Image (cartoon, rainbow, N blue to C red):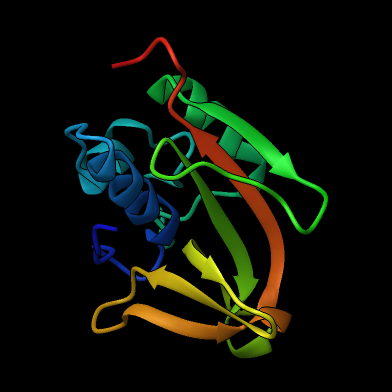
Length: 142
């Protein structure tokens, strides 16, 4: 799993996309994508780079990816063609929304790719997770 560091405090979702696409040999720069899609990433605002989960489906569409909300746990996925992004409250704090990429689930914790500088792969408590989102490379895409 490629480790990607988000370019600012709000670009965690876009950095997770870059990690996933790199693992599938697709050229992608999350900072450029954010700049080219200001309607989805609060372009020109103090929170530029932030993407509301309601926009994830449109982001997937623009990138030619499949998207689904995961509603049942446990769930199945097929890396590297599929990935799971976790939407969570960092350190359990509702005010600290964050997106990370699932590496491997464990019983009471989860190993994730955390795009915050200096974190890389890290284990977080499963209780922090508030939502699961699956992105996939369509079978016809090479």
